[in-house]
Image 1 (cartoon, helix red, strand yellow):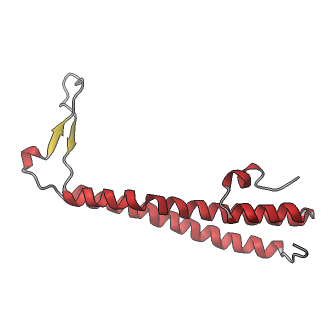
Image 2 (cartoon, rainbow, N blue to C red):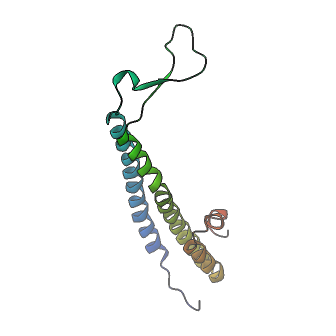
Length: 142
């Protein structure tokens, strides 16, 4: 790259906006998982009431009932399969957001320090989602 024109204050402002949206996304994902867990819990089973719980093997504390595990119905199983299927996409979103934020911070700090080669390397690492490189020196050279 031959020339850059980065305004650090503008980058900082955009990172605040992105951080706010990332927090909202995190809250939404937490709510999604909690709501799906409740839906699975209350969806019921396809077995008679007496078979809705399975006793778990193992020692029992005297005076306590043996531990049990509720049977999982078809709706709960389907919700579990759905969440497991979406897990890679959800994890990818968080890695991309982290890579973008760390890359922007590191590239901007390197730009301020006058090291355009390192700034470009930070941009390339963010683009490739190479979080290990970005996490090494999140603040850039000092």
